[in-house]
Length: 600
Image (tube, rainbow, N blue to C red; front, side, top):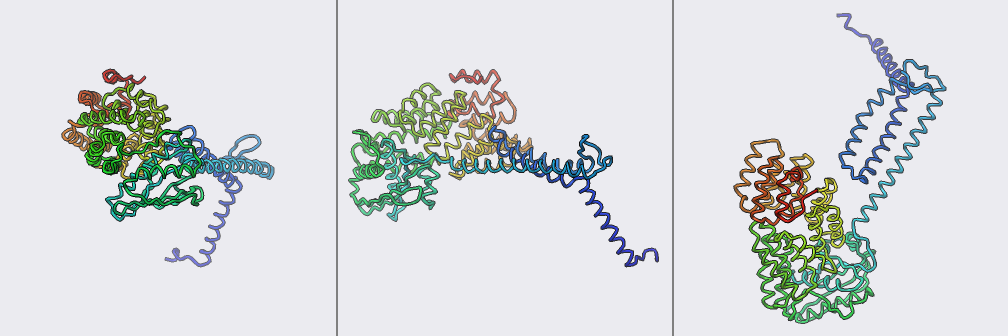
């Protein structure tokens, strides 16, 4: 048992010996310049990471390229330390550390070299980092349209009537002001969708001004009591929140149209903008001044702007009532056409009658007001999705002198179908510049970027759409598509399930299920999709078969979509899931049957 007894003295000596061993080890690290290698490696690594994060996006290198650089640097660090231990840089070249007498001349001269290398790398890294920070702030500032002194946004007027059912009236008056101010020379007026993004929000004037890229905000409230209305308005400098002008209008409801002109002229005068000569101010009013027709129009517009199948259906009887009360009500006909367009697109193969009704309504509007942009956009939409006639659509949309975001959006769609993605993206971005917080425009942009393989930029645009409108189903479906293309099946499923119930949701979920590695689940999912949606969405089934890699099934269901004249078929030829089949002669044959150019 004695040999297992260790004295206190022996324990203390062992501890001292251990410390000497560690001291020798750290001393050897210093002698072999391993510390120096670690410092220089860290500085150079920082430089490389800064270059990757700042320069790669300029050349449109995806985010995985930056991640690859970072991973390589992390993996290379221990390798660099091992090499620093084993080898030494000498005037005669690289030698094994054990074969070198590390004299002072080497330490002194090489120390200066290492210091210069580290200092130079640090300076370069700091410069690149500073440039990146500057570029980040520049990007943030450029998200909004550059502001100028002759720009304005009309924020939704607050209804103070205490009756939620009267809210449509204040919303309608806000849009009337937008339309009226839009007719003033040299005044850039933000579109309705962007202005109404801030409805019910409490952002301060400067925040809203920066987001919209305007220097002036028109805000206020509406209070209706019986047949009287009080409209309180103030013009705010969005750069500092100061009030430039304010006024209160007390009017009878029967004089509301004259009041709208008065408000538009007052604000225009305050901004010292020249009015359009003798041209009339084009407001969304009934031609006969019928207040009942106007109320019906505003209620229909309130429902249509919810952009759902059910809300569009509810809007139609109100818009029909508006045109019944005033057969010369061009704006009501145009909005009726847009509602039918929406229904026709959502109903897919069953939407033919809706598109024909949209054509009739749009032509009625144009016969009354030939320059009405929303009517041209509605008719152009019919030419694209119902007639598959791009020339007619382009002629219709190009005839609009002052193109609004809807016209630009439809023109962008035409260019995309013509396999001219760069032009399509440019038009899409122009539409966004006029309506910078309209979520649907960002979804369209994301889809076009996907067709160019720019998935990270597409993801950014789609996320912007969700930020602007969290319930935007198409944005979630677009994010699901990107996740599938980036081999992220679980993320794809989460995004697909966020889409609102309906055929498009079912297609997206089924598509995501094909990528999760369970063949039995995938087979069962597409079987259910066919049982439920073969009559109304053969295109969606073709897309799922495209992801499964079954070309015969793809073209079988594409042919069904063609035979049923499914409206969305023309806009989905550029769908990324069909890319691998575009060299198939059957794809060119489908394009020819649709009187479209095949991809080169």
